[in-house]
Every structure is written in C-alpha cells, then in structure tokens.
Image 1 (cartoon, one colour):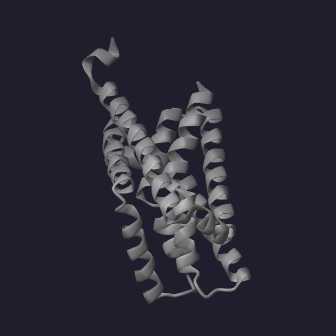
Image 2 (cartoon, one colour):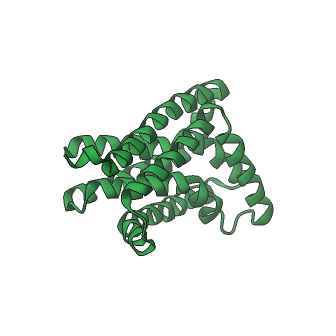
Amino acid sequence: MLADFITSAIATLLVVADPVLLSALFLGITHGMTKEHRREVALRGSIIAFSILLAAGLGGAKLLDLLGISLSAFRIAGGLLLLSAAAEMVFDRRGERLKSTVEQAITIDHVRNIAAFPLAIPLMAGPGAITAMILLAGRAEGRFTWLLSLYGVAALVMAACFVSFLMAERISRLMGVTGQAVLSRLLGIILAALAVQFVIDGVSAITPWHAR
C-alpha cells in the first residue's frame, strides 16, 4: 500500500538523516558565523543534499543495472550497511565519527564550501541516506505515484533538517547532552529494525519459495 510505503520512507530517511544530531554538528561547523551566513549555509546544504538524494532515487537503479547488480543483492548489502549505521547510533560511535569529519573539514576549508562539504556530503546525504533512497526507489517498482511520494518525503526530510539548523541553538539547550544521547539510541534501534526488513526483503526475493 502507498500509505505503508510513505510511512516506511519517512521513518527510514528521517532516522538516517537525524536532524537533531545534525543540528548540534551544524553549530560546530558554523561556529563564529553570523546569523545570515548560517541561514545561507543551511539553505544551500539542504538544497545540495536533496539534489543528491533525488539523483540517487532517479538513477540509482539504472546504475545498478549497468554494473550487473540485482536489486535483491543491493537490498541485502544496503540493509547491512544501514544496520552498521544503526549500530553506530546505538553504541554512540556515529556522533564521534561525524564530529571528526567536521573538525577535519573546518581545518581544510573553514567557510567557503562548508554547505557542500561536510554539511550536504557526508552529513546530510551520506552513504546511509543514498542507500536508503535507492532501496526505497526499488520498492516503488517504477510506479509514478510512489516515486513522486518518495521524492516528496525526501524534500520533507531535508526541510526538517533546514528547520533544525535554524533552531539549532534552541534544540541544543532544550535537549541537552543526555536527551540527544537517548534520542539517538532510540532512533538507532528503529533504523536497525528497518535495515533488517530490507535484508529480509532481499533474501525473500531470491529464495525458491518466494516464487510460489
């Protein structure tokens, strides 16, 4: 059903993107910037990230065909990749990894291209989000309404990230360190369940009894 697909897409992309965690990292990479510059970085980063996800949804399956990779194989591999990302969230390793990426980016290029790297890539449209878009586009099976809904969900999630960037200081004060840690772990568990479902779908598609 379309409603189930939309719900799954929202849950997957929202958990992978994790706007609350990104809001804290956004404060770090825009430290010392004016309010206007922060807004510009947030807007550009969101637009770039959405463009990347849109391209992944539109051309990801075709690229797999060119490489001779079946969608079932990608579902299994992508599910395992998302499961790894979920483990990082549950065991609090994702935040440390992303923070190290931010620190490296600030050293290399402090302001000029910060909206593209590291904000859009790899923080907003990282491997997990790109993989999720390709998997979800595969589930749509070429149905126009489903694909349009998926792109709408991607736009909605990127808009949520943009709003969280604008409210980053408020969110940081409201959640606190403990609140952010608890939320990240809960989202990690949800992502792990979604990742396992992707693996199950991939295995089911290639097992003999699936064709019966």
